[in-house]
Image (tube, rainbow, N blue to C red):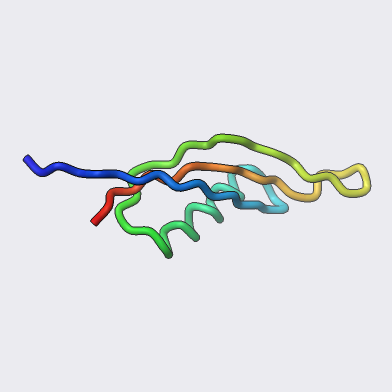
Length: 68
């Protein structure tokens, strides 16, 4: 049976549309850089506000991936 070692790294992504869109943007970017992604964990969601309106949705998340 093979043994695996995983690594966890954090990322922050933002979108003017929604939290879900911010997560999709962040995940897409992570897949361009990291191989062997096995999961994500949302750590925090925040909003930025400008002129009394929501300007951007921000998501801080962990990316879990298997080391080569």
